[in-house]
Image 1 (cartoon, rainbow, N blue to C red):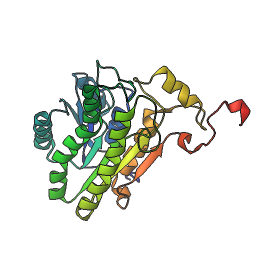
Image 2: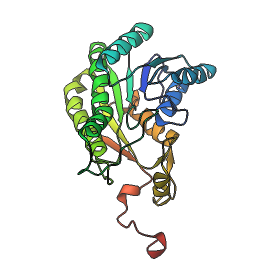
Image 3: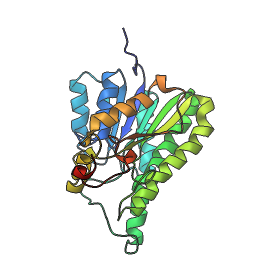
Amino acid sequence: MKSFIHFTDQVCLVTGAGSPSGIGFSAAKILGELGGKIALISTTERIREREEELKELGIEARGYVADLMDRSQVEEVIKQIIQDFGGIHVLINNAGMTQVGEEEDFTTFDQVSYESWDKSIGRNLTLTFNVTKNVIPHMIRQKYGRIVNVSSVTGPVVSNPGEAAYSAAKAAVCGMSRSIAIEVAKHDITINNVLPGWIATASQTESEAAGGLNTPAGRGGDGVEVANAIVFLASREASYITGQDLVVDGGNTIQEYKGPAELYY
């Protein structure tokens, strides 16, 4: 008996899946355990390790190394995945935020350099455009597709100092998705966004970890909790949900009071 949600005979592409504790790899693992064939993309060779981890679980998987900010590389890797697997049914746009070997720039808006701004917009918005632009034509031809973008509460809902570019990019991903959703719904293609809050991944900072402790849930989330939301929106069963933003933040953005807990709670 098949589970309520399954991905049997579906090819699932997950970008930004190189970190063993990250949201992308967590989603890939669940998709694979539910029957999906998994294509993983990362900027470094560590994607081979994630590929092997999935294969050890009996999941059909293949890793690819590509810089998704380079459009020629995007075109080539998507062509290769389709050649290897025969199609793409599910796209999880998780790549973005930071790249291995680079630190985030938290410079305030009045001091941010043009280069830093362009790089953040490129990595967190244009990268998602590049991949989606190359995958959607194939989904249209096969009359089916599920796209889930990993955005953030930062930008669409809230923000932080020093994150103007990141906020602009993540909010723009949500706006872009709504337009795409209208255009492709007639082809049985949906596109939605998952907006994580404070999530404990390898790239989490000390201040982000502290932020998680001050959510109503009293803790930060983990990659699997975000991945579970992604997997549902990527399923056949989510067929009448499109152009939507799903916040996964332990209730952080719904609380009005954000001072010391002992003075209110």
